[in-house]
Length: 585
Image (cartoon, rainbow, N blue to C red):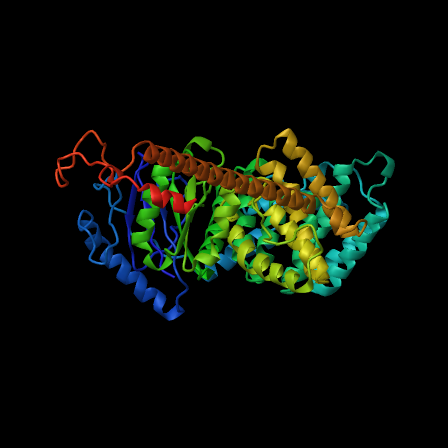
């Protein structure tokens, strides 16, 4: 995949320049004009040679900033400040640095944890987090009431096995402690317990189970428990970091990058103000974002800095520049009309006025890989599943076709669009409704394990959604309905035909059908009107031809014929004889 960089100046102008070796810029604490760069994976032995070559060639390239390139890619865009040259590409984040940051963020709070009580455990957790730059945040368990003694014993037992690095046994003991919580054994005074306090304790135990499975390199069960920890306590930033690590181990860097981005935002939202911790999270987010861009082979990406909603003229200019920069990815080009994308380098949640936002442009090698995006974001009522008969039960072959299209074509692109965007909404194209519809297909195909993972994932996204975006009253009702139906589906209470997302799909199908009928009727009406008009014109032409015949008038003599008047032939014949007339009688 070929990638390029984009540099923005302070006056919102763009400067585009093609680079042979480009990467995402290393994060700096103060947000600066962004240079967005991506790269393909490289061999470890070739990394140093290419970096040195790039550094040595950077000054020479800046001198030729005003001259066009021979390969046809533009060095600047209309309105760009040509006096400012892009800075040399910094070295890419190595895998070793990424692993060190991940270890500090995910396992940095586990040293010397004792379980005299859950409150003392939380206090020591916060002290350990402060040593690595953490906030006095997290579950905030130090202010909870005294937990039940049996639960305290179970947690002490589980933690002792964890400290001995017997992670399988520790996971089973934490699971036993979680079962005690489900039976009501949480606090010494259960009747005075608050629902949120109980959720915090259960989320804490779920997070310990996640840590055990991550230590054992078992990302599938770790991911499932991370969903539950986020559902119970969505504003604990380390829950999102553990989920990101599980996704990374499963080879899904898009979801991992989104988890790191949410963790960075939740860290600030929960009161974290330590720059070292924030920088570490952004470094982890940046490394995962590089991996997400590197893995994509079917499309290329460009982030364009912009503070407001881009106009159609701006989008046309960017897409035209994209065609010149990425000639291999121009079969279909899509620009996200909503904007609102963020990158680690230029993001400072504490200062919204200085945080740089972007809108994203994707270019595909093949049109069929991305043409569905236009329907999702521009049509009035798009049919996401493309099912020909949405009101009938699909056949097994249709279900397999939907499974392939949604799971391997549509959802990966939507996940990539979301990995740099906090607020995605609940409408068509957000990825939430599409994922729930995909879960329905999995359930009908009897893929129950994948079905459970998708529902748990979506439920975790719905739980964190109110903290990431402003929600209108209508969206609040839809959010509650989606969460209720998702929980009922996981518990197996009702059939999938009664779910909100299936009803939305049918409503969209009805609207699409009505719009198609309206368009067909209007086309037929216009065709009939055209035929009537042609018939009227033909009739009027015929009447005109009858009123004015082609023969010339008699009062005007013909120059070719005899000018003398013509007499009838009977005037020149003799009168008939009488005897002939009598014979006839």
